[in-house]
Image (cartoon, rainbow, N blue to C red):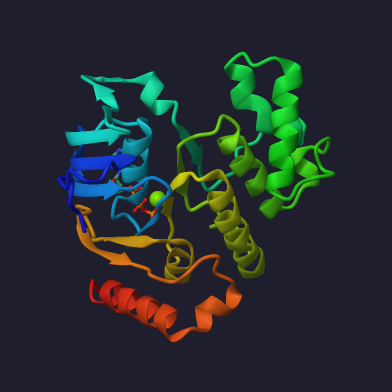
Amino acid sequence: MTDTDDPTRTPELELRGIGKEFRSRSGSTHALSDIKLSIDRREFVSVIGRSGCGKTTLLRVIAGLTGPTSGEVVIGGRSLWRGKKVDSEVAGRFGVVFQDANLFPWYTVLDNIALPLTLRGTDRARRHARAAELAELVGLGGFERSYPRELSGGMRQRVAIARALSYQPKVLLMDEPFGALDAMTRERMNLELQRIAQTTEATVVFVTHDITEAVFLSDRVVHLSPRPGRIRQVRGVDIPRPRDRDAQSEPEFQRIVRELRHALDEEG
Ligand SMILES: Nc1ncnc2c1ncn2[C@@H]1O[C@H](COP(=O)(O)OP(=O)(O)OP(=O)(O)O)[C@@H](O)[C@H]1O
Ligand SMILES: [Mg+2]
């Protein structure tokens, strides 16, 4: 499953032996080791693993926010890094959503969503039309003129997702985007995200602590071992879409969750 050399596939995203070591005066931390993974277009892949196993680091390496110590990130057949520099055209294919929505408090929902387009010089009329369309897509129609402080946590996360989608990224990278939400809102957001991912046809890499969430959303779940993070297993989730809440009570769903939970428990 971690093949990178099947010539018949054209993966959207390839991780070719990613290693990452943080060095400082107080010593070094080996965060990731030899991560090999090939992700197809429109695939939804989750990354799970213990706290500190390198999930965020992996996402940051994929996003081009920090360089790998070894290995290569290849997007649509093109290398992300050119020496020590990120190929900005390749990095421009990503939308990134982190745990905090990170909205600008003095911008409306619409202007927050449109921010990446503003930075890219899209004119006001076009970026507002696009932002309004996205507000609708993430279920925020009617809140375009609201400010972040007037929204709930789940709504703010939806603004962040809409913002990440604004320039039609091929790849959406998400680091525990629903970690701060209550269980019910989180479940709703999972349904929303599934719908959004299908509508936009984005390839998604999604980091979470939550095994049920990972299985619910994913085509494959990647389990990273504790430091240094290595791929311990890649579990396919062959459950038809769209999945609804009832999918979670199906035997196949529960079997996969149980299997992953046991594998994580074994790590002590
Ligand atoms: N900038 C950094 N400098 C030094 N060490 C770092 C840095 N970022 C992460 N690390 C170390 O790398 C390891 C992996 O961290 P990372 O944040 O990727 O884990 P994680 O799996 O995302 O954890 P969590 O589930 O708690 O979010 C940790 O040991 C951490 O201390
Ligand atoms: Mg993390």
